[in-house]
Amino acid sequence: MNDHNCLVVLFNSTHQALSGEKALEEAGIKHSVINTPREFSVDCGISLRIDCELAGAAQKALDAADVIYAGVEPYRSRWV
Image 1 (cartoon, one colour):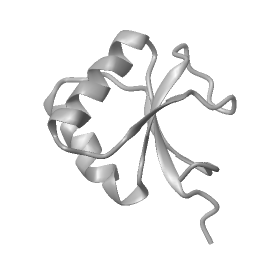
Image 2 (image 1 turned 30 degrees about the vertical axis):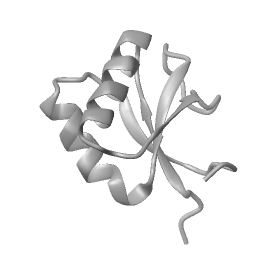
Image 3 (image 1 turned 60 degrees about the vertical axis):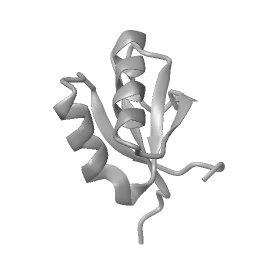
């Protein structure tokens, strides 16, 4: 059984995170801007939360927009 209910897209800079947010908005992919969870060690304090089933579409949109991201990790959120 998976203990996660969403995915978190991680970034190394705020600029990259904002570029990622713009790419997902333009692709019509539902997401939320969140504070980066403590368990992930990256240099940026903000991340994007997406539904698990949107992972492929989100990565495709980020790659198409040449957005650099540090990773996409499973996460258990209280807010989903």
